Length: 196
Image (tube, rainbow, N blue to C red; front, side, top):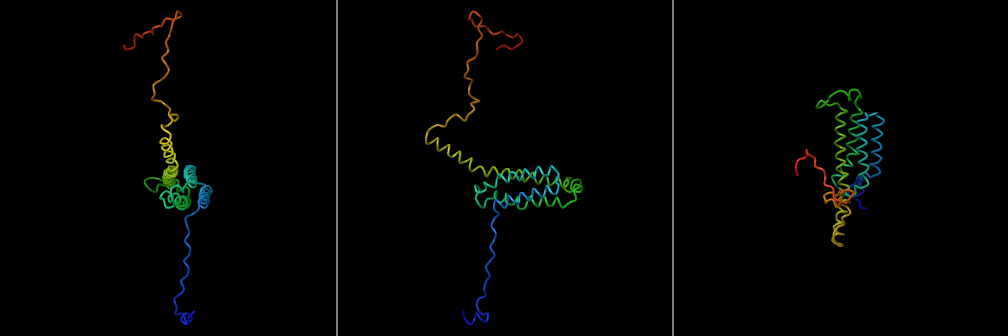
């Protein structure tokens, strides 16, 4: 320690930067989902809103354990996180701040009431989360395809056990009618049927 530091002439001490929080954990997101659902129930949202909210939260819950399949910085992973931490709480919160009779009856945009606009928003979030869920599972589905190609290359042609065979000809021979003497019976001809 030199004389300069005693008089404040030295280099000023720079405080340590505050650690930046990372993305929320799966447990934090699940807790947030529980909170959003409880907020909607406590606010007594209409059934049409609650059913759509629960659809979105159900798909998000299905996505969360598999988000690592998408990679850390994926757009789909961000969409799931933002849906839980921002989009759903804002949508439900905005609706709950309005008087119920006004929100459910007064048109505010394009002839739609607040509740109908909220339903549209939840439907959009639901279809988006369905697409994310498909993307989350696609990696494992593609692994099945790759493994099947490997097995086919390694051991020969693929098994036909997975085909329904709906376009194959019927292997059963046509039935023939015989009379009691064993002679074939000619089919009767319908006089109204066109000739063949």
